[in-house]
Length: 112
Length: 114
Image (cartoon, rainbow over the protein chains, first blue to last red):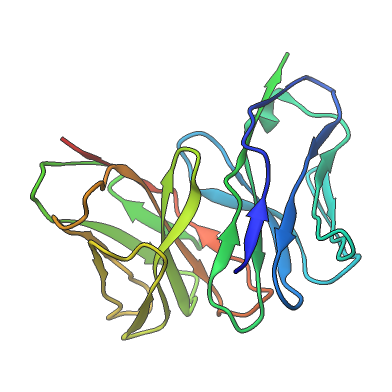
């Protein structure tokens, strides 16, 4: 079946550090890939998405590129802020399949 | 403003009681979903509905029930048959159920069984 793998964390970084959160997936066909962010006590918000190979999703300084050859969708940001502290979920959605498959979420803590 | 509302934000239940969580959306989305979130387990799908008066079980439907009588509403009932109901419950919706369709989430309801 489909699966998404990401580290649980927490990932602790100093403000202005470079961020990478790895995400790899297993799925048949050509899924769409998503990154969601969850701030404490809230629901999930879409951060970015990519719908085909080599697409780059970007938003709020975050980027991720759909790499079909390595089945990866790593999240990056050049300079994190304290306000980026949250849990980040990688997810995929396959054509003709109602379910969205989520990773376990990676907690990011940014310290001043 | 369009969005998804869930109520209540916090809910306490005694063992053996049924409880219903509300989910309403004004985005005119056809598809709606219920997820359960537990620490270290990510999100797990409970039920989903692609259209009014139709719904399907997800991965962990046992002990839960839903209805979809109106497009805007998808309430979830946690029954006494659910062995470990304490969790954070998230409702979501999407325009349809296509591969590229983004899910939009409500703020969640935290259920605690006393």
